[in-house]
Length: 200
Image (cartoon, rainbow, N blue to C red):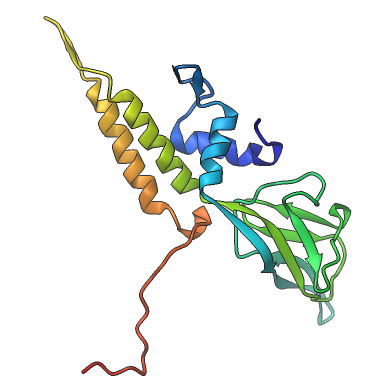
């Protein structure tokens, strides 16, 4: 069953992967029903525990500052309507902050409090998803499906259905190249060289 907290991410994924809710059927499975997209998203989920939110100060005049906005290190977060299931904001001692006290930009990972927190430490538990990696998976699946298509040539025209396979493969490669980027909320690995090290 499709999860309501993934509705926004699901629609964004449909756009990236050009996937309707009933593109084709294999056996008794219809691609891409909401529940199938949720399964793909879950393959590229990061479970967040005690993400140390970064407080952002706001100048309110007279040389004073206040703290309303906090930023997570993650984006593309699963939404919740109760604040207790998959998206939990809590303070340093673990007290949950009720949803009446904050609002969230789930895509950017920003939590905005209704009152000044005075910079108190805040933490987030939740789920983040790599949409680019999920889109690459869907394009690969579509490529496998369209591999059964064949080219048709008549006296006056030619239908190159094999182009669909090549297109799907190119799109899979494109989104796989973006997977792990900050926008996709995945994990990137880079090599760092220490400035104080001397190679022989």
